[in-house]
Length: 180
Image (cartoon, rainbow, N blue to C red):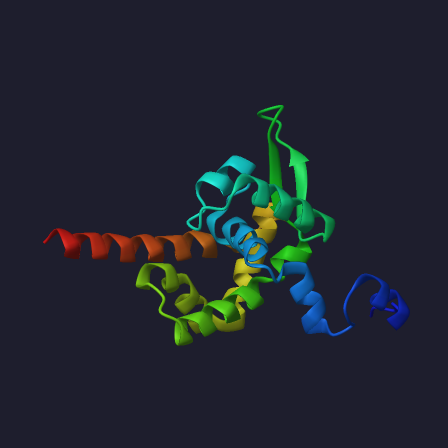
């Protein structure tokens, strides 16, 4: 339970509405894209986030959003032991718990917007899998980003790998159809 007074909220935010506060933290498109790429693409380094962004995020925007997400506790940053000038970005528990939000945004976008099949397959599968799949995905992210032990009895590929394989299958099928 949060025991912050309404005066404290007013000093930092427009209102104490949970929707407003969430939008203030992750509501701009670039913050959502950065978290999406960390969550679904396992992109953990600045260069990887920059060069593999389908939306072509600018380096100054990426740097700003990483700072904001760090300040809000959505992501964490550690030095990369393999390279002195690199950092590794990880989702925090706060960031990992955005999985259901992303699942619902993806489901809504797939229903109402002109999405491509290959870029919407993950959203479709997450929507079909529902909360059980979201929980399994969050468990996988905890292993990758927080160093948590895998759930007991967990074998085989994780949810992110399964979603990626589904994406690659659609891309391959479309490529084969175009080639014939």
